[in-house]
Length: 219
Ligand code: C5P
Figure 1 (cartoon, rainbow, N blue to C red):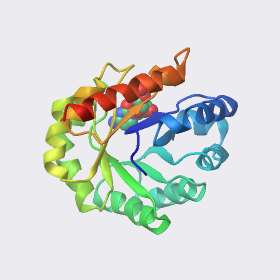
Figure 2: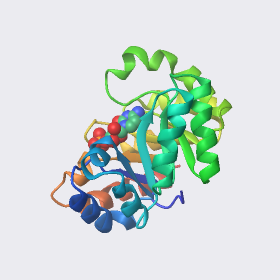
Figure 3: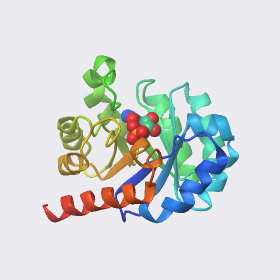
Figure 4: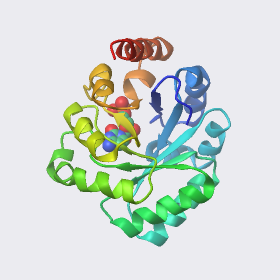
């Protein structure tokens, strides 16, 4: 993933046509497009192949199964053209290593969820986030997913993972601040509804780019 804008679009729309229209409109404003169950279940795995011909794709399937099943899921989505996958750490090291090995064989990146960005993540995930971040490093992941809604948690995760990447959802619709997440150590912001759900997605993307630029200047 080439870092230009420090922005990743979470494309959780449900139709192939809408997804491709937004991808064409927004490709220059985002470093990658993240697709997950909402779009893949509605449009089929072929949408990964179509979008990946326009932009780098992160497949956010939050993979969380046995090592063998994890491998089968990774092979399917990386084989369809995704450049990166997102997996959960909680099934344990063998499951995560299966994802890391598969990503490596495709020359793809693996991002590991340490803690999700919604309020409920504080219940079970946050207390284990440090251990999951360590496991991500041990397993050879490219980076982790950490919540822009809780910048102090990004800081803590950064202290554990060194120079691995942090991709961070929660800006916009979930209330997180772009500037605070970047200052806390996020490398990329993942933004969905506040862009694709807006009347003018390109204007929203430009506004985010301005916030990223402002944060870079104040560093
Ligand atoms: O629409 P919104 O900006 O809230 O989109 C955030 C995206 O990031 C969604 O696709 C959501 O599934 C995803 N995500 C998250 N928290 C994580 C990992 C992914 O919100 N830890």
